[in-house]
Every structure is written in C-alpha cells, then in structure tokens.
Length: 162
Image (cartoon, rainbow, N blue to C red; front, side, top):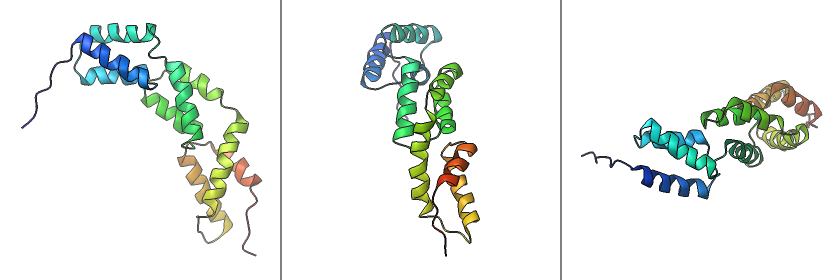
C-alpha cells in the first residue's frame, strides 16, 4: 500500500531547506528540485529561494568553487566532467565557465600525471601504442581534454618491454 505524501507547508520547507543548506553547500538547482519533489507551488518556491539567497544559505558561485575543488582533488575529475556535473546541479553556464577557467593548468596536470602513471601499471595490451590508447580513453572518461592527456603521456617515462 502506498503511503500518501503529506503536503509540506512553506514554513516547514523553509526550516528543512535552511537546515539542509547550512550543513553543506548546495546549488539553487538542487534546492529547486527538492521543492518540486515536495509538490510546492512556483510562487512559494521563488519566495523560499529568495530567502535562502538573501540569507547566504545558497550561493551558486560558492557552490561551484567547492564542487570543482572537491571533484578535482578527491575524485580526480577533469574540467569536462566537472562542467557536466555542475550543469546537472543547475549551475548557470557563466558561473561554471568562470570557475573552470580559474583551475590552473599546473594544478590540472599535477592531478592528471599521477592518475595516468597509476593506471599505466594496470593496463595490458599487445604494444605500447595500444596501452597508450587505453590510457587516453581512461583519461577522457575522467573528463580530461585530449591535448592535456597527450602532453602528460608524452612527458611520462614509460618503461619499455626491452
């Protein structure tokens, strides 16, 4: 038997969302999705969202910076995958473009090189070319750009089978 959903009032929604946003960074898109799932009216959603923004509970730029930093540092994601994640979280293109441009190339390569070196040890192939292609495919899946991947692979000291 399905349990009937209890309608969330504006005050309850404000209380729940302000607590939720105070505990961790969230985007306005995530907050909006949550309110839609609760079946709240558009005007109520806008009022609550405005209160959260004015109270600095949510700030998409602050969220985008934290998200990009964490995904690059801990999950070893590239710019393209971070961009996709921010888009899915409802962050506007001008905000995430600015945040992604702020990632320094040195920091980016600093993350990619050890990732490729570690992966190289686990890749099997008939020759170095095949292994390099598998390595590129892996890094592309992580969201890194082909030009940066090639540069890192060219700079890597790959042990040969001699």
